[in-house]
Image (cartoon, rainbow, N blue to C red; front, side, top):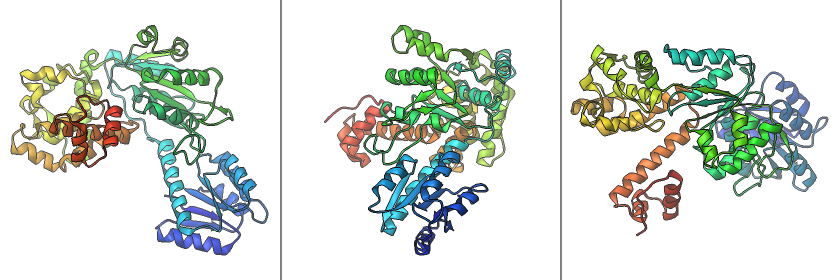
Length: 497
């Protein structure tokens, strides 16, 4: 983590902040004037910048303007005299994160700096993203068509709509389109519109001004600003709320948008790539998707084949995922016997590549020997209940669900030993998270967090025969909380006492 820069001509203020932040194990770098800080910005940047507003020579507002021009995501905290309201207003108009009024309480100052630090680290994480595009594997003719399309689009900034079943790798293709485009050196920002609650999605997309709604304590950049000059990938676009579709259409039409609560138009120079597993034409006919937005997005359509259409790629993918899982766990990669590989190739996997990857994670953890036979496969795949295997797996569910549900079935104690070897369910969670991160999936915390909460609440509801108030007591949460979570997560079967 980079140091926190303190810019103030008052040596006593610099000293107090340095000592207070040192107690929090936070590195600092100090400057006695804005000019020196501006010169240092040409070679390095801080994680957070704290600056006095009135100093000899260039002011803190001059420094703020310089920072926001070159590093718009860098939080700047302005120190100002308590009575200098005009300066505070000017600081916010210039994009300051927050201001400290003199004389300030040192504990509150450290708390404010920590808040700015968290925002800075979040921005850095979003903007940096994966440095390497995850490999897209496939030798089947259907996949070769996809590769040729990526090549033909390599010098284009045209809008692309990627369609295909869940788990076919739509985000990987979007990343490949970005990597091989003229915008390759700029940010790639991904957002799953189905994973964000409706009332938060507008702010996620367009950002918000300070005070725009309850809890909006600071100005926040949205994904369009974060993707400036780069690519914005909107997954599951078919689930976007109708009223937000209108705002997205406006951005695509004239390249301008407003932050939530804002009055200043923002210019967007962003390439938009969207994806959906739904039939957008049908949603247009059903009145659930704007026809004019559909035509804006459907400039170039790229359809990804399901695994059923490219079965010859399954052995290649299995070997790749087994090596990847073994590397994450620090163990030797498992090998598939010929009958086992033929068995996998013949499966109908509605979760497609994602489900196959989850299955390989399960095999790495649970299969007893180094050479995997058909009998070592998950119980529901090899028994008459194989129809259950046709149920789609939600993103990120596979390995954890199979391992937790089958630990007692695969070789009895051997299954539990394998689970223990992986570090228990925490180890499986770490494996799943590592796999999602390696695959370049976005919103990993949100996806796994929602699955974790859903599993806990569903289990508690089963235990209390659907009585949600009793379930809330057992889980140690409030009645209002469990009611809200049940609605957010779409859990059925709950009832009031």
